[in-house]
Amino acid sequence: KNQVEQSPQSLIILEGKNCTLQCNYTVSPFSNLRWYKQDTGRGPVSLTIMTFSENTKSNGRYTATLDADTKQSSLHITASQLSDSASYICAFYGGATNKLIFGTGTLLAVQP
Amino acid sequence: DSGVTQTPKHLITATGQRVTLRCSPRSGDLSVYWYQQSLDQGLQFLIQYYNGEERAKGNILERFSAQQFPDLHSELNLSSLELGDSALYFCASSGSGGVYEQYFGPGTRLTVT
Image 1 (tube, each protein chain N blue to C red):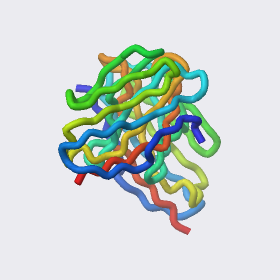
Image 2 (cartoon, rainbow over the protein chains, first blue to last red):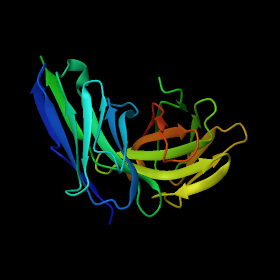
Image 3 (cartoon, chains in turn green, orange):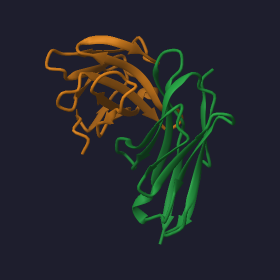
Image 4 (cartoon, chains in turn purple, orange):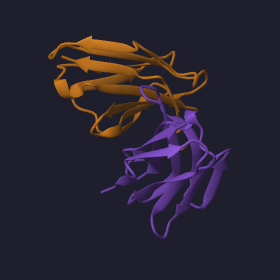
């Protein structure tokens, strides 16, 4: 069964600090991996999109990595800002039915 | 602003009722996707339409149906509503297939009482 698990479920960090969010998956095969940022009550916004053959992708202070051997992806956020407080969701496009399969997200709170 | 619009923003209705959610994709996008997000399930793919035709189906209940009209807007119909249908419903659009970037709308929050 295609599954995507994210850790931690929630995280509190101080403004200016870095953090790394994890995503473990069993989805196979997949075309690409996406990381989304979702503010409470709003639609997800894409941060990065990587193909299965890429190892790393950056978008400003956000860097996503993919390790196909360990079936793990991570999202690293540097120099966090208060506006980074949101839920971060990884998603894989693929599987047997070619659809987006989402993790349950990590809720990040950045405190001053 | 993603360019995808959804109406209404909020909807409160009673069990057993029927509601229609509406989505207008970004200008030029041919694909529309519907997703359900509940607290315990996360985001779940429901159904995809491409240029008026059903392209892919996910975990969509038989009580739910959707269609895409010639002007490319889409409607999701939910009938015989149950308490468990309370969730956020998102529409997303993309230029072509789902392998490409999908742009999400602001969502419709459905509360079934």
